[in-house]
Length: 322
Image 1 (cartoon, helix red, strand yellow):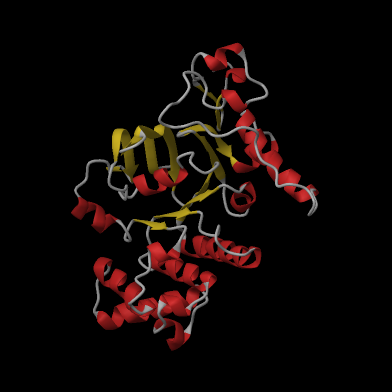
Image 2 (cartoon, rainbow, N blue to C red):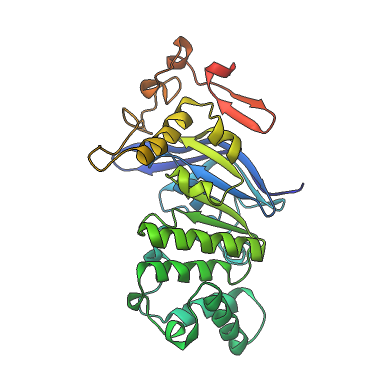
């Protein structure tokens, strides 16, 4: 099947005044096919959000791609001028931010904001844009004039998240990137938003790259999973296989946290992986997970493991001959 998105040997660096050069992505390599839903799993600071902003060309000031390729339907996105990237965002690829405040203008009505996106990317007059906006708001569960004319501050957190989903999907992009879209919501609203994303993805045949620190969130929507640590993908494969038989010690540790939460009680401290993620400006010479790994070998402190491929599974760990 033809690849929709191909990311090859992607390196991204932040130039920070106090920390110096920080390698946020270090050779990220994966691909997605049309209609696929892929999850990106990892702790805070592992590079997940950097990946989400790099693909549509939304890196902040001070960050740059130092090497690698991002291809959408065989079109290379790395190196495109900002004007070309703007024409692609919304129409072909769209990012749903973790915090709706980043995507919503507080002084404009909801309907106007979405209609502006339609007019920027799709043919038709103002009336057509308004009709498409109203239809999309209804699809995300915000029907009627009340929501069309509302300002962001008049909506709940879950309603604002539905608005940014409507923004992302109104022009029917091929690929939607969702960066922790439910992390700030309560559990009930989180379930509702995930169910909405799943329904819209299937109905509109959109490919989804869903980013989360929570394995349970990805389990509800994703076909495949990429596990990231210290700017690298350390394991990837079909989600059901990775969750049933994780190979990398980091993946095993992340999934064990879910089991601990499910079996624990209110008097038990929240589980966590011992140790801390590495400082990306001062990475160790060997495997980045080695200081926290209970299964480390002698080679782990000396050099980084190569990626080992077996069928649809890939893993970076010396236990598997890397």
